Image (cartoon, rainbow, N blue to C red):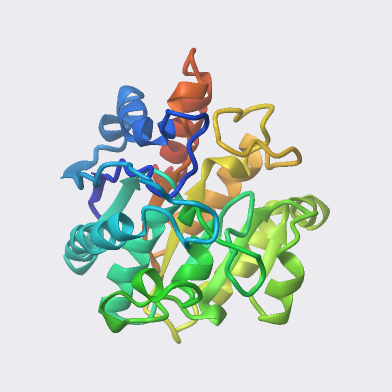
Length: 298
């Protein structure tokens, strides 16, 4: 068993404010998971905190590109440094976000080391870029496009390493059947498995088939990105985009377990859960239970 190392990445730089004069509450995710005793339950080691810059969109307006871009560009290499250290040491980093832009820290870290894939478990593809949208803005809805080399160079080409992940090394799980990005992803030959497809063919069966492709020796391994909004809002309302038709807890547990227990999986990040939207903590408790169950060997 590899040592699980918990790293806090409490960045909310990639999300729009939920209301004027406020900031996204997902930066509290790590604290909420720690309140669920996730470190103790996993018998994990402490990896510390990578403190993000201040959330400040300034006078940003639509058409100005990605907001907080300079802050994200500064934060990503620092987070990558921490993740890279532990991956090279043979540890298994569990990175507690944060919004989805923290995935860029993992992607950059692994790009420095070699060629790695990414298995994104997400309710949406997060593939918005100027080639398919009139404007961009929130990196948390664009990180997969950025990681694959699309988008402004200050984010997509940090250290001259564009792309951090090749299209053919990406797998997307749990997107909604009606996701508008599926057509473009199909043209790019980026495999996706929607919620409906999991139910039609079986979660365990499709997870196993996809895992075989992620374990091919063409890559050095893969990273798992988990966005809480992959769950149905009936059980996970505490996200910024609670779209209907998501996975149920048992389905997510089966999928996540299959991926993270692979010897080729090198780490996991957790994003988007917002404790401000979960006053009694039940959604957070559910999320912690799923992650602990997936990472705990029988």
